[in-house]
Length: 200
Image (tube, rainbow, N blue to C red; front, side, top):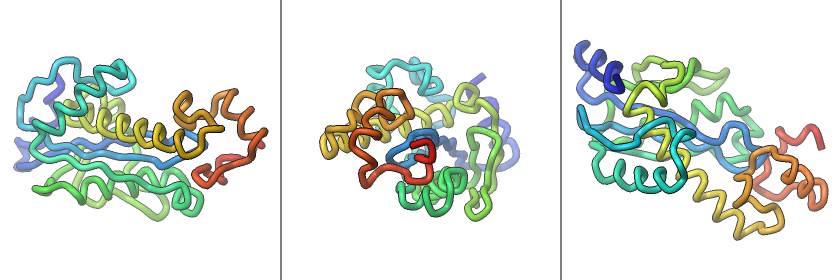
C-alpha cells in the first residue's frame, strides 16, 4: 500500500524516486522546513506514517532510522525573511525544491505531498507528481514528513533557548492563544514572520 506510487514511477522507468514533504507552513515564527528522501524499495520501518500521527518519541527514533537506511536524504528550509518577501506558498515550494536538489545521489522523479507544485515565483523543478495526503499513502513521503517535522521542532527548541520569553518549545511558533499573548507582551522577535502578524 505505501509503495504503490514508488512502484508505479519505477514501472515508468524512473530509477531513484524521492518523496518530499514540508513542515511549518502555518506558524507565526521560524523557518518552513522540507525534506526529500529516497528509500530502498520495500524497506520496512515500523510505525512509519504521516508525522502528525506518530508520537514525538517514535518520530525521534524514525528520524535516526530513516537517515541511517535511506539511499539518500536531505533537509532544507526557507528563512522567515524569505517567507515575508515571497509568501508562504512560494517558500514551501522553494524549500522542497532545495531539499530535492541536495539529494546525493540525485533523484530522477519526485512524489510531492499535497496538491501544489508551484507558487507565483518558485516551483518544484524535477519531474514529479503531487499526491493528496501523500504522507499517509507513500513510504518515501512519510519518511520525508518525519525528517522535516523533527528538524523543524529541533530548530524551534534551539530558538526557544535564544528567545526564551516566547516559549517556542511549547507551541513551536504556531498561532496559539499563549503565543499571541506573548507577542502582545513582547512584540515580535527576529524570527517572527512579519507578514503573518496582521492580527496584532
